[in-house]
Length: 634
Image (cartoon, rainbow, N blue to C red; front, side, top):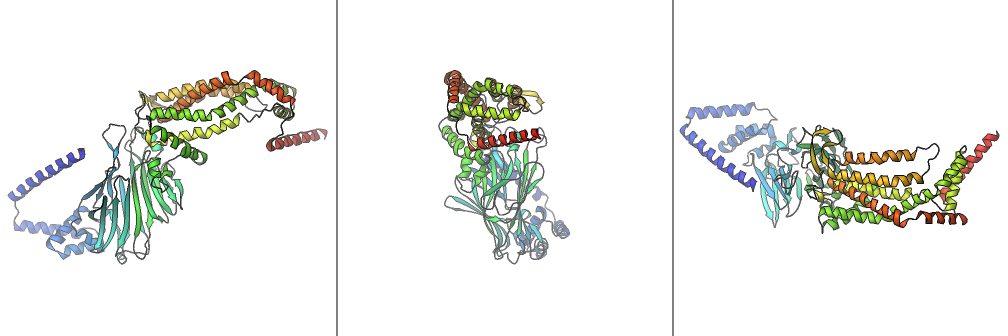
């Protein structure tokens, strides 16, 4: 509504100004000599223009002269600069005009000059915070460009960004089709065709030529360059910039990204799409005919987040457009929309791979566990509550592993006196001590690795959560308790100064998560120290655990203060639930006396057959012991 009001005011203003100018012109009507002098001056300016310069002023003046007076001199002057494409400068469209197409989701503004999109607005999303009234604009104010470099058969180099296209807007059913033609003649042209369907973020983009096989030099492919300076759309520019990158699909389904930093480059081959990805929004160019080669460039524009507050990255893509039978014909598409996993996956073009869910098992956990489970929960309940229930379900599912880990610690704790006794007995013979310790474990039916394996199983789920929550588009601008936006930090106090590595604000959820992890480590560290006696030549784990009790919460505070509140909430609830599970297991499930009795009973039985790994380890130790004895005899 606001834009329409501004347009109406502009129109009224132009009408008034135009009326005043007419009145002034009428009052100050020049004589014939003045008219002749003005015409001669215009001709002189045109004649002195350089061959490759094509400014709006020259084109407009030449067009008026050529069409209104039919002056062949002016047309010839245009042909010196533009060759066959001088025809495009004689059309009514050779002026600064725009055509707008829009549906329920996006609004696109395409310029006559250059024929490319100069404004792309997402109609259902706001910048920075909900209620800001500022819509997300992926393209505006010349932050983007699209150019095809034309090499003509008469050795000219022209750029489509400087030339004027003729627009024709039609409708086929509910589809809007905008044809932009750069003409070299009535039936000779380079065409950009935009196809916008209802309720779609994807815009069809056909780029083709007709009748230009003699106009253009077809010996070399045309050079297409697309560039974009990505606007800041989120509350924290540093956090947003961390997830802004170029992602591309190449060689039939492989995908990769351009490294972040200053002046980073990649040159993938057989490119299917290139995505200029921001944190929660993305612009993608897709092609049905893969680009044989490419040059992708990324440059970080945020040097100081207090000063550089408008743009995050500068992206560039350079790809060749190959000729087929003397003409160009590429079926492509543009995507202007959210970096949302479900939305991108629905297009069935591997676009969801631009979401950083992690590699290998981490990505699988996110794809097949976290995304479906959280998607189901958030479709019925508020997002903050969904995170809590989601965390409870994950922790309950992992509780058998937690139980096995604690049970292993309890068994090791029971055996500790005997292990200490062996340590004293074979103090001067570490190899013998190790052999006897392994025999004790085998006789008692205790696996010293049993406590480590459950912990290792839980690590992928923890890492997957670090990938999932920062990428969860559905959390953007969703509030919970004091957090206005679960995808950004939950600031409860703005500091008048900046603490290095911490920031200039205080977030509450990271503080709660740090307190929870402190008590969890305090609860478990004593048992771990008791369960694992110090081995000779090894670091003192008990001392290390003492330090970690305090280091881990501090790291949590620093690391999570600028992260999304959703991730901090997950970690707080996760540690809280783990404390509860450990309390129940320790006080109501695991009985140390019963474990001790079971171990004593196991000692009376035949030792379990060792696994292959244990057998191999035992053999190595025995060989080492035999070699040691042999060396002593010598």
